[in-house]
Amino acid sequence: MTDGQVVGLLGLAMRAGQVLPGAGRALELIRQGQAGLVLMDEASSDNTRKRFGDACAHHQTECLMLPSGVLGEAIGRYGTMVAAMRPGGITEKLRGASARNDRSSTEQSICGG
Image 1 (cartoon, rainbow, N blue to C red):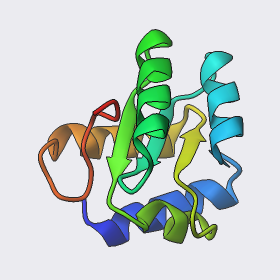
Image 2 (tube, helix red, strand yellow):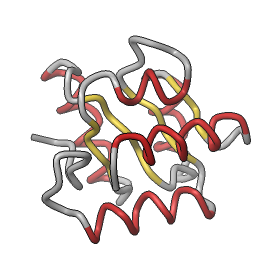
Image 3 (tube, one colour):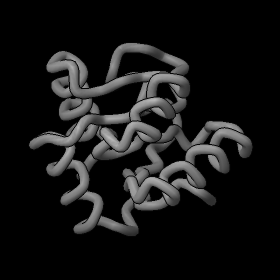
Image 4 (cartoon, one colour):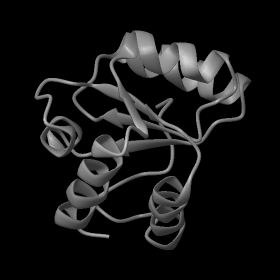
């Protein structure tokens, strides 16, 4: 999946209310067991990567690492490093594209690092 397709899907998901941007809201959704997918910017700090990598592993939530700036651009909130998506069709489409393109430059299927 190309960066443009990821941006389009994430923008649509944001407008549909399926994306919760920000570390606090994302962590809360993960802990409640309601996160279908966690998205992280590759420019996020090591501490953020570890915190969300551990939370995703503990709560069995998949995490995607996106290229620097793509997450913020896609959801219209530049500088956003972490977001969680609720389960649904768009989440499954992103997850499926990740599985098919596991080694692409667009996304990687792990966050912990």
